[in-house]
Every structure is written in structure tokens, then in C-alpha cells.
Length: 426
Image (cartoon, rainbow, N blue to C red; front, side, top):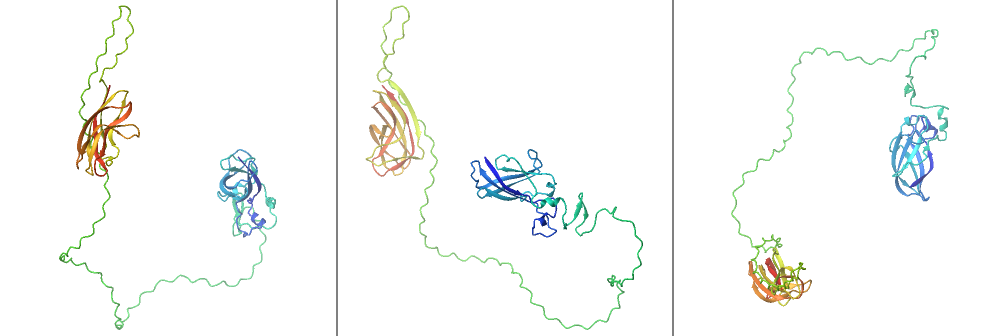
């Protein structure tokens, strides 16, 4: 919240037209009184420090010291100097002489975003304006009005009512001497035209006039028809080969291949031993389930995966295997893993791949199950099916097709499609 310390406020507007002369303003006798108020003040923070920068201030005139509706208002943005400001009220929203009708007016001041300051400032007379209630000396008005009606105009002539101005008629005066003759009046209007005279004799033929200037050049005629084409010139030398164009955008992924055939059903586990028959009497608690039989299947998970046009990059020979695709499988203690996976695709380098079934965990390198098989990938899609089984440590792994290059440079496996099934058994 801010507070305003008013330095002083000078009223420049008076209800009489000769106030400008009393202030010593450099104006002609017929100039209008300036309808403006000079307002000066200082803005301080609540801790007494001066406000700085630019700030919006709203000014308003009221007929009441508090409450009521403003009869005039305007808002200005003022730049403060150590909290001080000076401005002319009426420079944004003009003041009118009718606002100052002799009744007391009050000035309200509001800082932007805050409530109006209290109390309102009473507008009072400035020095020498106290004699404006009566005329003291000569006056120089542009006209004189009474009750809103002009009685003396700008030429100094009486234009008010004539009633009561004429006195009693005096005696007739003596006849004065004859005055001098007045100036000659203006010429009268021209008389009507007279009748046309008789036609005169034909005059002699005049000399031949000089030749006229040459006329401007006429517009260009239409273009003639195109002549027959000339013989074809010899072929120019072959130009240099252009730079290789940018690689085209990757094509859309091919449709997902059909799911592979379901693998063979694993062996059924053996039946557990039957518990001894209890004595006849109340039904006893159910006996514990027998242990699982040997070679029983605990899970069989089929899967199919399409890697799109751009598959993984297969490294050169001698490096670790690269997983091409697979699924997540959890293997318990002393359990076996059986997988059959079919892979399809081709490598643009045309290299021969060594492919097999691998499992991997986290960031560790893939581990090959069984033996890898060579896969000669031609320039078009080909497929290979691999089946492998092994007992692997307990844990959760990604099981799938893996590959490395047996010769040639590294290349991308394109249009790769992987499908198959994984069995976990006891």
C-alpha cells in the first residue's frame, strides 16, 4: 500500500474570462482561459521511501467531500523523480467551464490497483483570483452573456432586448446644412445586344500556311509467321555423372507372417502314489498333492514377431551373438528349456550367417543353446528353423533367435520375421 504526500495544487481555472490577464499570461485580450489544473505531489512507500519509475494515477472531481459520483475523471501514466510528479489535469480528458459553477469541488486521487486516497483535496482559489467575484478595472471580453443569452456580440454591438432602453423623446433639433454630394454610384448593368449588322464583302485569300510537323511513327506491325525449323545440330559431349542422390525413405514394414505350427505335446507326467485308506469315521483332512512326475511340461509359450524393414545389424565373425528376436521366459530350479524357432529375412551384404537359439539376461552377452547352423541369406527372403534343448540356470531370460556372421562385413538383417514356441519342463 502506498501513501501520497501532496506538495501543493494550484487551480488555473476560474469562471471569469479575464483570469488569464490577471495571471500575466502572454495571451491576447480575446484568448480563452486555459481549462487545466496543475497538480503536483509526491508518492512515498509505507516505510517513507520515495516511489520510483512510471505509475498510473487516476484523478476525479466530485461535488461531495466523500462518496458520490465523479463529475469528471481521467487516468495518466506519470514518471516519478524521487517520488515527485507534476502534471496538468485536463490534458487527457478536457475540463469544461461548466464544471466550475461556483460550488466547491473535491479532487480524488487513486493509485493504480489501490483504493482512492482519503480525504479528498478541496479545490480553492489561487492568489488574485479572489477578486474574480466582481470587476475591478477595464475588461476585455470577446462577448457578454447574461443568463446564457448574448447581449453584446464580438463586434461590440448590443444584441440584447431593446425593451426599457429608449427614454422620453426630446425636442426636434434644427435642420442641419446640406451635406456634400455622395460618390458616383457603380455602373448599371449592360444593355441588351443590338441587331446584327449586314454581312461584309469576302476578304482576299490568305497565304498558304507552313507545312505541319511530321506525324508520329505508326505502331509496329504484327509479328510474321515462324520460319521452318533448321536441321538438328550434332549431339553434344556427354556431361559428367551427377552426384549420387540421397537414400530414399525406408519403406513401410511388411505384413506379419503366419504363425508357425504348434509344437508337439510334451510327455505326460507319471501319476503320484495313492495314499492309504483311512479308518472309517469322520472325514479327515485332504492329503498333500503328490510330487510332479518326470518330464512334465510347466509352460508352453508360442510367439511371433515382425521386426519391420530395418532389423538388427549382425556383426562380423569372432564377435558375440546378436539377438534377433524372442520372448521372456522364467526357468525354475532343475528345469529344462526346449525351443523351436523359425527366422526369415535377408542381409544386403549377402553374407553367410551362423544362427542358433540363445538366452540372455540383462546386459550380459547371449548364451548359445546347442549348436549354431549356417544360413546363407540370398538377395531375397529365406527362412531357417532351429530346435534346441538344454538345462539352464534358474532365472528369467529372453529366449530367441541369435546370429553372427561367419564371413564378410557386418550388415542389417532386413524384413526379419521370427516365430516359434518355447517349453519349460521338469
